[in-house]
Image (cartoon, rainbow, N blue to C red; front, side, top):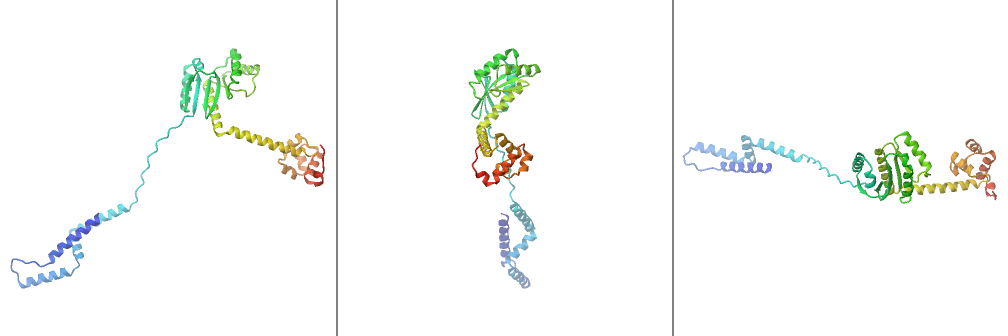
Length: 321
């Protein structure tokens, strides 16, 4: 833009200089000397380049210096790279709820208000929705497509032990995933609970009992158990661990079968070799002295193991155990 103004000014000034360089007719009379001087001046002006005449006029007026300064400022401004504008912060995406907690209305009516308020606030903080329903257990958590039921005894009463364990036996036949959370804050309640547990013939893990110090801790444990079971269900960790355990058992069975095929080696000796020496390859490379140092096998058994893996005539000959 400034360059365009500059060129227009040069054209205007140049036109004005050319207009002044042309001789004009004067009304008043002049002498011959004056006419000759004016003609020489016009000749010198006509011989000077037009653009130089325009620049001289601009320099005299002081406009060129200011225009060049404006042009340099404009060039620096255009050459400066644009500053990146900070991107607006994205709006937080809504977090989906983790699951649903169903509370028994009969259990709710027996509890104090501060405990119900704590449960509601704790569930809301962990993105669980709370529903009040008429259900057999005290709580049912649905998380990750898995339902986990809970019996929640907020204070152990030794006089009510028979009713509690009778209810446990009834509900464990209805719910596959059942837990019993019992608050036993005193030593006397702990001893009473332990005695009642074995008195009524409970099996370990069927269902799982979770003793806690207070009701608030008990509900936190319930939520952690339900969440962990839901995550395991989603990631299929349980089936993966079961498959790995089955593969380990199968590998161990094959290991024992190989070692017990050696004359005089039984299951106990095979397990001892597995713990002390390791794989079949390590046992095949072990010397008789190494086997005697690391196990309690007799010298005859150690010699038999070494011969079995290193003497072809020995391991190729038929043997009867």
